[in-house]
Image (cartoon, rainbow, N blue to C red; front, side, top):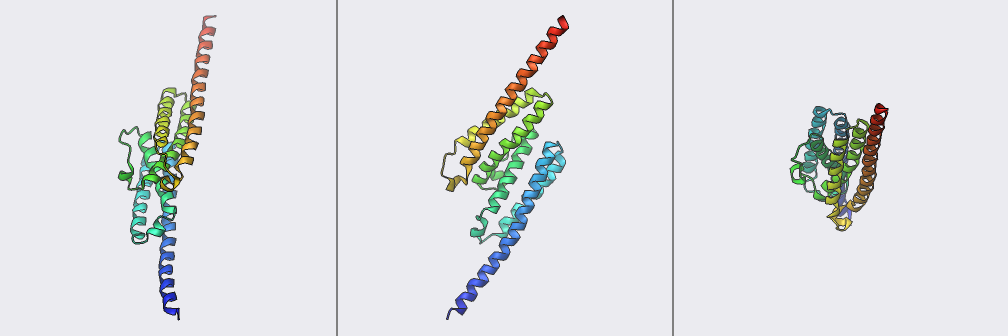
Length: 207
C-alpha cells in the first residue's frame, strides 16, 4: 500500500544523505585551510595564509553549489561554522596586514550571523597577538591591537537580538568582553612594568 510512497521518500533521503556527507567533507576542508592560514598569519607567513584563505573561499563556493535546492542541509550548522572560520581568518589577515579595507560579509559571501560570530573569534586571536607583542616589548602596536579588540567588542554589543537570529552571538560577545578585560590588564601592567624598569635603570646610572 505504501511501497511507492516509501520508495520515493527513501530516494529523496538517499540523495540528501549523499549530499550531506560530501558537504561535511568540504566543510572540514574549509576549517582545515582556515586553521592553517591562522597559524601562518601568527608566523607572519602571509603568502601561505593567502593561499589557504583562497582555498577556503573556493571550497565554500562549492558548498553553495552542492546545497542548491537543499536549504535544510545548508542551514544544518556545519556550513555556518565553516563560514565563521573563513570570516575570522579573512578579517584577521586584513588586520595583520594593516589593511584599512576590512572585508565585509558581502565581500566574503557569508551569512551575516556567521560573520559576526567570526568577528567574536577574531578577538581571541588578537589577544594572542597582543601577548606576542608584549613579549617583544612592542607596546605601541600592542595598544593599537587592543584598540581594535575594543572596537570589535563594541560592534558586537550593538547586535542584541535573539539567538535564533544571531546564532549564539551573545555568548561570543561575553567571551570577547572577558578576553578584552584580561588583555587590557596585561597591556597596562606590561607598560607600567617597563616604565618602572626604565626609571630604576636611570636612577642606577646616576648613582
